[in-house]
Image 1 (cartoon, rainbow, N blue to C red):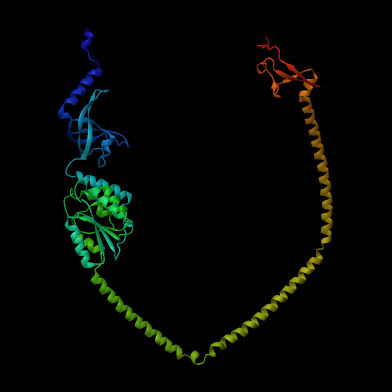
Image 2 (image 1 turned 90 degrees about the horizontal axis):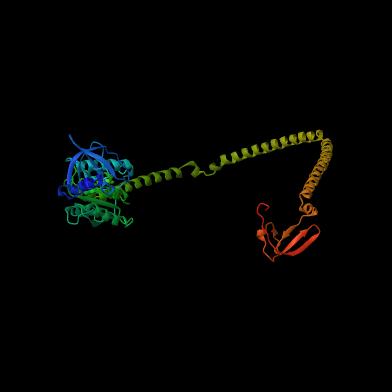
Length: 452
């Protein structure tokens, strides 16, 4: 009976666990401290410690919560952590279960922005090599901004004043709030689905704090701008504000008005430039015509045009000289060929083929005799080998065994019977002797084991 007052370790740990669970103050705890023993585990739960100057507590952050963390935790970093306190029963130790984590201090967003900027820069999203040139005369311009803000008004007024030919289409999106990033990405994807309909895209909003401009620092928004098929102009905030959208865009404008000026040419300046080019073209054509006219007059007054026969005198003399050279060259070539022919004829007489034919006949006779000898020797070896093989076959022939009085048995199908297990009573068998066959019927079967 005295043993009933003693608890097991499991019971005690379970009791303490229930105490932690029933304490409302431990259900939602906000902690701040310094990360300790943090070792990043890819695609897994994270186990680390949170400490201050005097104490330390073990922390567990499951993968589903850690995947939502928008910055890269590092050893020694001060952070804000939210979660609950509970007991790990198998070890009897209490620990903190983290559900959210942010960098501590006023620079939390700046730290997150700094890490994301370094990550995207390492991937090359901000490289100047990827920047595309803005079209000079755009036909259609897509604008992603708030439908109720002053940004679209400033862009349309400036674009219509500078280049009325351009068509401006607004794709409204939220530019502030938790759902602004998804709204911006959705609007840009609608533009991308139009193919090459638009020549340039403008994305922007007015000024604000870092929190207000944060949707333009979201990773999915930056990557979507990088993936757009047309050049992108970013006009986010004021001139002193710099977002990741400004870094990844092909051009950055300080204001919406400046963005419209980047996207469109000034029609007045273009017309003035065309008029200036037209005047320069007319002047250049007059200069060219004057030079050609003077050249024509010089040709008409030249000696060749007045006495055209002089043009052929020199050519006729050149032809005569070339004919003489050709005649001399052909004669020299024929003489050389004659000399070569005489030399070859003399060499042919000196090297009569009769001796070579005699030597070849002797060699043919010798080779024919060697071939005949080798063939006879080869056939003799093969005959001896064949006789040996025939003798071996005869020695190993089963007919030799039958001549000594042995018999082999087959069933009705011609299959050899080698065991009493293959035979049934009243079955007809064939007994093969050396000089014939006997048909028999099984009347009795006796099986022997080990010759017993």
